[in-house]
Image (cartoon, rainbow, N blue to C red; front, side, top):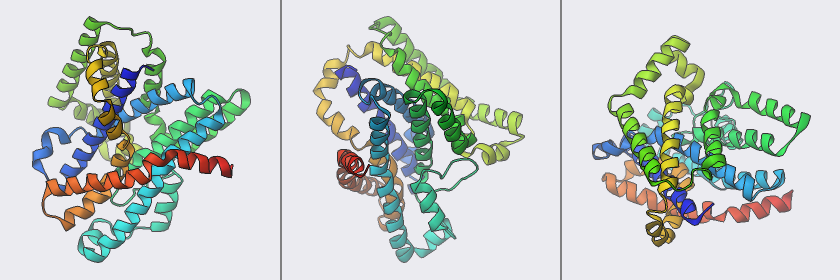
Length: 350
């Protein structure tokens, strides 16, 4: 992968993380001034799935040549941030329940902490018919999806013969319908990597791809076509939105998500064709982009419980958001940027 493409991907994943942060900040804080950019949270998660598939395509092809290397790297990547996020939730919940019992008891009554922590730590919180949300950390649902996509892909990519089919069948069974429903989006990201080298440099086609993806996505959102699709498919396939939510939960928008994923891939392909035009700007800003992107996973998993807690402690929305991001950076330096430590620890134990 070229240097400019790598920087571009870092910029895109940081942007997606910030969109999720702004989306939840607007919800929690009631900050109406964020409304113009706050409606893209779910779509940003879909974009994350595409980027994840793309990056896994790269590392599995170019770096992680064995199943051992692949699974150790994926495990270190996820655990280095997911487990600290669970600890953060519990600590802030304890303090919050003591300082602001009315809010926490009303918003999160009767939390069964043992199964919540157990299922979440083992990434089983959205598998099969399980639907366990992490209190004050809504984004955690997608981590279970991500982990099982890593597992299913790794089994297919690194194993052969009967072992592949047995392990794949087992992982599909455990993952369940909700997770499998959005797996094609993740796979589309992987396929995007497999074919993106063939795109080449094409100014005209790149502009067309980017412009067309913006236009169609804009129409989809401005006229609420995506919501109409979700409503229609829910009635057609499940008899109503409540039934669709019961069956698929976070995957209930899958038809609209498929369409949005296609537009995102069109957009990404166009950017790759045009990257040479703004390569110098990317290289000039490489250090700051790389540094910001190094906190992407931390922003995604730490911001929600922090914003919830600080919203009760501080009155100014901008201050809450700024302090939340500052704490994310501090924690991220201990967790996300220490993946190699976890890899070495896991390797020694194995």
